Length: 309
Image (cartoon, one colour):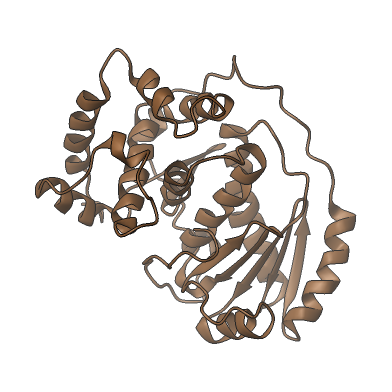
């Protein structure tokens, strides 16, 4: 979720948990593990990532001064992680969650690589998080869990709420380099897909999460708009929460069908002619109509369970 959006519910976890647990990513098996590898034959030539260590080192001094005493930092290009704990915690969050998730996301989806530094500021609890937002960022009403500021590529999190929000926002930060004109429905669908995820080798795979029950109730009550409407709706309007759920589980469905990576690339590469992604979505599912896909997708959603049984 980008700065200015309302927060979203996550399961609060104890601060003492390891980052890999907070992330809600694991090495567990899912149906998506059998998904086909992405078709890279039509992908744009990949660019190499520059080493930003010198710039990150300079930013480290600036941000440590801003956050004050009691904070530690770790660097691995293109990321600087600062946390209100010790250096071991900073390195662990950087390695397991920040770099672990983004490295996999890059490999699966991206051609353009980050060429500017990203700063990740992690706080243990609402008191420290809100004090920083108010005193340093002059934001008196920050989203509850955290946010990404695309203007300066800064992510700010209350990490006591869990690592799922962090991966959500890291997904936005990475997409900004590769698909800057991505529409809200797909941007938030991709971000929320990885709120609950697993690492499976070099892949990151989304799993069912807390957004599922409300979506299933809407489907059962016949109160959910069509997939076609999702691509053109006022995404952050009155039905924002349901829009997030619908977009997430459309991405989840494409992931399980082995289609998501190919769709991302096709949409990205043709966004100038198809800014909403609707045309590319219809082409991805052809010869089925999107109306038929919508019916199949709803039936599929109703088979999912969260928490898993």
